[in-house]
Length: 258
Ligand code: COA
Image (cartoon, rainbow, N blue to C red; front, side, top):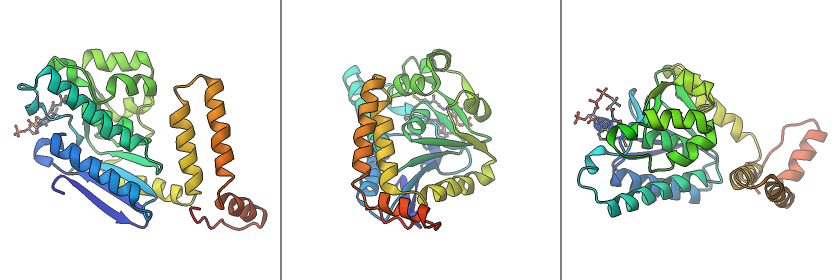
């Protein structure tokens, strides 16, 4: 792959978007490679946790590639929006936790990509924004939908209607990112968080993601049904027996992802 690199180490996959001359902006080729990469990750049983980041020290992803916009017809715009949404939904629906390590500009499609990940950690120099209105367009890769769901309508419309850029600290204050680290420590700190996830039961994490992602938009009653069904399913796994036994035996569990 030319723009998306996949590195696997000790069950943790690091996906790096590398198109540094354009601040890792998303064009068709990058989206295609990103999709292929996450399809590969889905099939690879060795991978347990995924970290997604941008190459270099300046940008996570500075948005969809603006070079495509001038000649784009309304019909092509619809297709482009649906394409980006599909790739990002593939990431969001992953049964393995996906962590965004936001190492710089996360603008437009970059902010939307980070929001499709399950957790977001940012470096102190990271900048978030949905600047599409400055270009006469709107967010089209999920920004009008995921941003209000994550930070609430007030903060979301503040960003979406003004196109303002906010720094990592402010992003943490409004709940857009989970935590902020110095740039030099970002990957090691996120690696530590991924390491903590590796110690937990993988099937339980997958069922947690299913219950949270599937239930968050449902009326509470239906969400609770979904939770009970996931709770039932997790009791079909071998790891839940190991988890309880290890606790009762005062030892660490040895989960087998079964
Ligand atoms: N699409 C295409 N190219 C982009 C891009 C994008 N979203 N974001 C940055 N680039 C390109 C620039 O055009 C420039 O290319 P060039 O050297 O061939 O001219 C290169 O990346 C470096 O960017 P530059 O603008 O020179 O860096 P900067 O430090 O002065 O500014 C930003 C950084 C992120 C503030 C600025 O690049 C920017 O505003 N980018 C667009 C962000 C945006 O609107 N994203 C939403 C798109 S829908």
